[in-house]
Image (cartoon, rainbow, N blue to C red; front, side):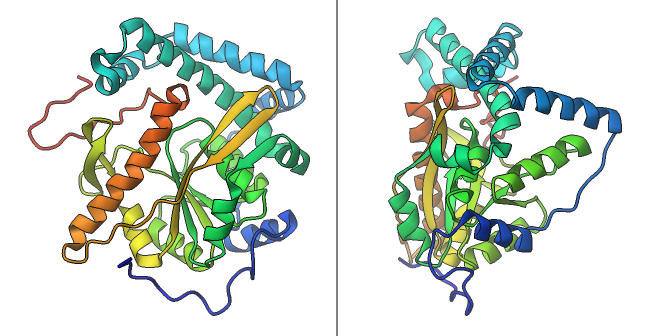
Length: 337
């Protein structure tokens, strides 16, 4: 490896991981303090009422409600044009129009389940995370995080991404997630509380890289979605399922700077009250000391390839409705026009 590895801090946060849920909770509150944000009281009341109803539902009822919501979104054709363009880009003539519509419908059903689960699971308590959500391949995480260089979990708009990080936090590993601040203060406050309830710190889009590097230096894990469509000045073009797409380049830079391990992963629902967070194998760093820019590009592509493999294996989990290929290389037309 030719990574520019920084020296670990003199006082590492924990001697060895995992530790108790209570210790992680105290750690998150220390380094990721939350300032309560107030919004419209009518919206707050409506949201609290909806949350109360959904949380008291039996798991089977919640599962069916998610299914119904997803099918409603499908029949309303929520961003169906975007989804079908994306499916055409990925599958071309390899799948028929009806097969592509079936994937779009399945992804809408998944979206419905995500909505309901996000209202329920973050506040379900230790018993749920311990007994109803399995962390698959935890040995990879345990070995990597105990090197005391930190871990970057990479994924994308795949299923219940926030809650995948929540399982890691509730399993005794200090974890944070990167996300944008939501304009609606009521929704923003709910999301912040949900993440805190799952033992996850929150890194908003301000001095993001510095905050992530500080966390990695403390030996923490950070959850990142790398399938975002990036502006040209903040991204780099890599092959994304057969077509160039502007992708996050800062992730690879942070790995080079810190020596952090990179592990892909995702969360899947296998039953009304059964979930799995599946971790992949660590993505090894490919050195290219004679060309630093090419080194970053190669490793960015390798990270992208690992997330693409998850999407192709579970296409129903990906949010096909976001414009992944919106930013185009110079001279190429808008694919969504």
